[in-house]
Image 1: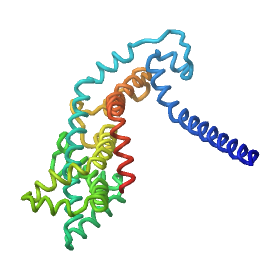
Image 2 (image 1 turned 135 degrees about the vertical axis):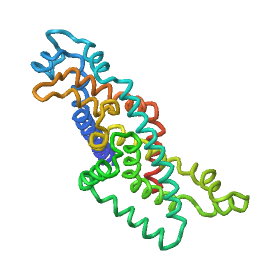
Image 3 (image 1 turned 90 degrees about the vertical axis):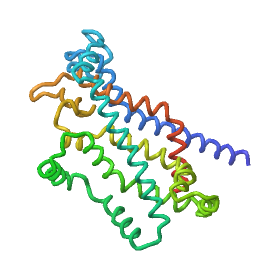
Length: 287
């Protein structure tokens, strides 16, 4: 009996060690690109070319790349543009998708079923398939490109389908209609019932969608590059690409710019890490 127990205990230890080593290997493979970008952002151009993987530098480490990137990017301006576009896009997506998802869940009519099906079906259409007609219409016919509000409108539209789908599933499975009936008996209108009773209960799903949409809008390059042509409207990813020349590139400044671009979202993630993880877990369990 003791021999069988020892064999089982040894097997569990081997499995734990194997699992730990596997996770560490994937973690290191995932982190190596980020570590290289951070390391080389402090090197001079010649050291990056001769030894991009080396910790030892012939010319020493420097902060000049960061100061040059900060000035050339016009960092505070483009940071403000990214913050404005990301913040308002996320706010609109959360507000509108939660209300639409609630309506599709509670309204038992043909209109809601048809439009929910169309909205769910639109998720399979890739953005690349419609980007040229979209830009042509908004640029040639409506002449509303080079405007941050146009980008916010497009971000909101493209993110609505998935957000509505997730809210609809959560409300359908986790919000009992008896709570809303009790609110009606207490004198709440439909709007008051949604904002005072239903919306606070959507917190796990809202937390998940906030971080997903913030990451998507903040890091997006393709759509802003099609909509925003003027330099004073550039977001952080667009301003980073401006360091690439036709025949040359200053890699140290580019990597410093990449670190400056990622740093705000990374700091936000570190501060909200606990809420994000709890929101993802709660949403995954209830959906």
